[in-house]
Length: 267
Image (cartoon, rainbow, N blue to C red):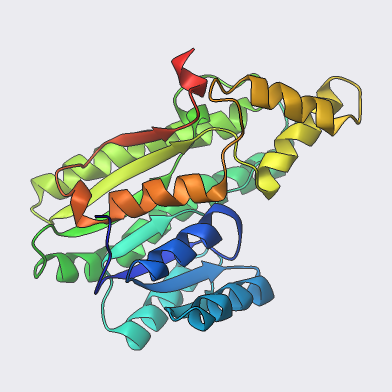
């Protein structure tokens, strides 16, 4: 179950956090992984750790907001491993500011990474994914990192919620487009709750600032209480969902959103 034997996967923003955990898990279940990020040393370290554990990995420097950077990264992946079966559009940022507080530059940066990066990644990977799908029983796969903030409103960051809502609908629409065109590329999204990563820590700090305090431990406790399962998510929790969506076990899923949120959106 959930094996990726023989598959090549490209992951953006995979030097650390959810992306790093996913790359590591994918390699452990048989995939060759390409890690794209702007955090060069951390990315190389993640690739070295995967190789030390017996996996195959390549790190490439990637600015997801730049079309040329995407093309160079995909070219490097193909030169190393010869094909591409899976794209994980994972890179994302969180500014933690409301509509009145965020500057136009901050908004433009949020859109560039969270939305434009997903579009550019999809476009750059498409030829290789189409070619690989032609020889695969279940085709190729794209997994887009959305969020519960792309499903329900966010009191804390409506701008982030807007971008993740866009990722949610882009996922559904590209699944329909690629299906109509016969590309045999499945496109699904995953929607994490609050995950205990660097970005998760940002949400605690932002919530504390909004309450006029520096007590991030209390805001962390509030976040935990918002998840009926009784804890925050771990990067590995999301990685397992991504691996499933990338695997042939999800061969009849496209245009779907997998919610992994500890019950957050069930309330």
